[in-house]
Length: 143
Image 1 (cartoon, rainbow, N blue to C red):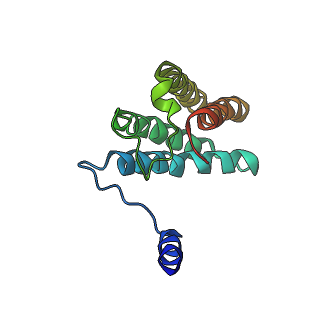
Image 2: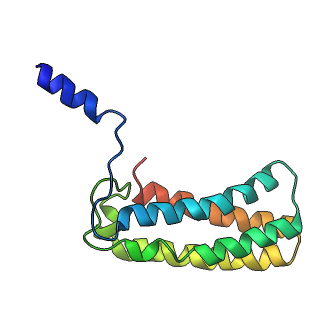
């Protein structure tokens, strides 16, 4: 009983490390976090009515530059802890690929809108990307 309690408590709060060669899960998680670091400030600008066209455009360029990084790290043998990807990434790979392609198209549209420096166009394009992220997370990511 004590051993089970100790084992259970030791698992609480202990992050699982990606110890596989090349750390594909950690690498893709880090890549998504890096994209989020440029995407979140864009949303903050729009939600707080503090849109700065030049800054927004620079962030859009950075987002597009970072968007390729995570996808190659979803190999067939990368469904292991600490992944937050659901098995549907692999069992519904065609749907996952469609979501990825839609994300790329939407980020292209966001870049064009951001370069146009028009707040409303930027807002529409941003929330299209945001909605695609949410859609993909609902289907393919554990909470």
